Length: 533
Ligand code: ADP
Image (cartoon, rainbow, N blue to C red; front, side, top):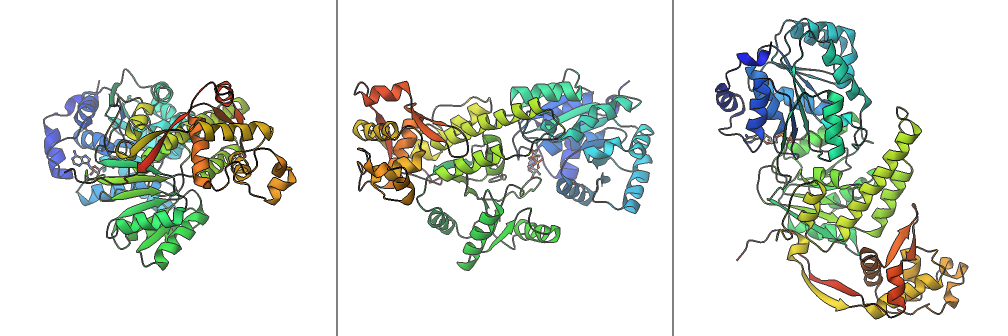
């Protein structure tokens, strides 16, 4: 027996129009809606902003009984329930933000099938009162939002997600299950199907491409100056600036405010009240710029964000694409700019190295997780350093197909010239070898530029034959050449924290004069979409 049979699929357009005000479904939505209405489980992998919520909200309104939506995000639940209620949908949420009386009331109403949709935090699925109420009513559909949280491979593993399958097994009648996520790797997908116990689910993956987003990577010598320039070029527009630490958020936000920009801030160090206020100021256009850590953004539906600037490199491409993807949800052209520096790599490595092990996992699982994080970081770094198409790099990382050139990212639109850099490369390689292959890029750079710092002197590096071999050459140029040598496999970074440079077999060939090194030098870099002539 299946609850779904009672729904007339023709009504889905009426619901779409009446409750959501839309006349058509977006890519992938209708298939998922149809699947859930017909009683078939579904796994929908759609990027942020694609419209996953509608995929379960429309069936929830058409099916008899109360649909449950499992979501880890308290703020999202509240916003969605408010939005649904405003549209005349009977909806509620059950999470730790309710006091006892509010919880009792919501549970009582649910037990009387007074709601069509109930959002529930995964922790609640274990509560015996909740289970009792759920067992007494018709539950045609359980939608699992952020479904990748069941997988320990995902970066957001939540042990409480493991309660979901157990909870479903207790229900007198198995509901249809819809799982939703923006994370697409094969391991995570398999885990979702297995751990949630999906039966032959319809799998829908909508393309990850967001054609209206212009991606660029910059390597500024001064991040504050570059940021100011980027923000100035976009004055009057709404933007988010992500920084990797609270301290940096504070600095960037006060510096922008001091220059007269309408900016506010968001990070986990602020009180709940201030976070809520600052978020509302941004969402309701009282402030134009939000400077935040990655604590900001989940569940925020602001469609007219015209740019997302990353002041620091995130720890992996999953985070980057999700955060950058908060730009341009309305489909209008928007910019996603990442400012990258060598220091970002060190910070990211430090974070990985110092992440507390998850007490719910075994030592082996924690080790495997850390390894995975390091691997993910290396793809993030490669994205920052690639000279190929940025969009293609990202789409392929997510298992999507892509043309070699999108013509809408900073690399596709940068004017490069190819130059022979063999002689400078030999100087760098030689310096790495002669100083004993035990230093990182900064020291190598200092030695080559002839900098007599305490550090350099303490290792007697001023006495090396390669000392001051590139005197007068700008640090940025040498660092960029070191990156190029790494990207082309002539040198590798070894170790975490402060990694050291070592010369590879291919690098030795260059040193011995048996191979040439070519590099692509950027002449002009574009960071925004220009209307084509
Ligand atoms: P996701 O959960 O996939 O990140 P949301 O469900 O929050 O995305 O939807 C993103 C935005 O797209 C919302 O503003 C939503 O109202 C809008 N949206 C969803 N479906 C449609 C549709 N069929 N037509 C127009 N807008 C839509």
